[in-house]
Length: 164
Image (cartoon, rainbow, N blue to C red; front, side):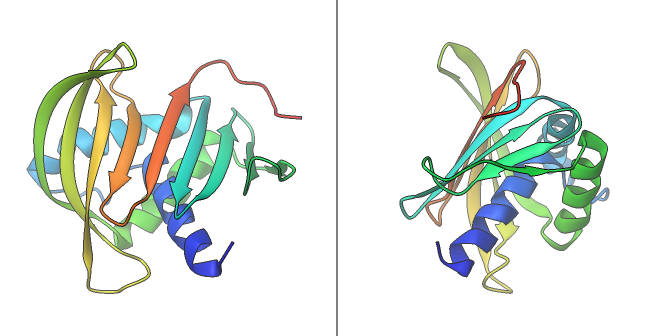
């Protein structure tokens, strides 16, 4: 996997687990609120870009990652508070803007509110990428993100265990 793909997938993963700067645009507040709820949850993330898949499992006290379905899992000591703090710091540099929505739909049997927004691309300074986020209407948690750069992040919440 190229360094460019790793960096972009890492940025998407971080933005999918925490919110933007505290001074978000009012229209972006639902996205920030949903994003801030994510780091505290046990979740499985699957980020796809240019045919590359990065998976992670977030537990209370650690995060496990692998860079392909055949790669071994790596344990990263990182609790929810640390994930949230890291993502908040990263998103001070990559705040949400030009937020619109919601549009309502059902995906996988879950009622969703879908918002569109723009966010700086960490690989091309000054360029804003268009993205969409699906937020569960009942739990307020982010479930899916898509960027116009072809990155898709899917998030599943549940009682996950450390992968083997």
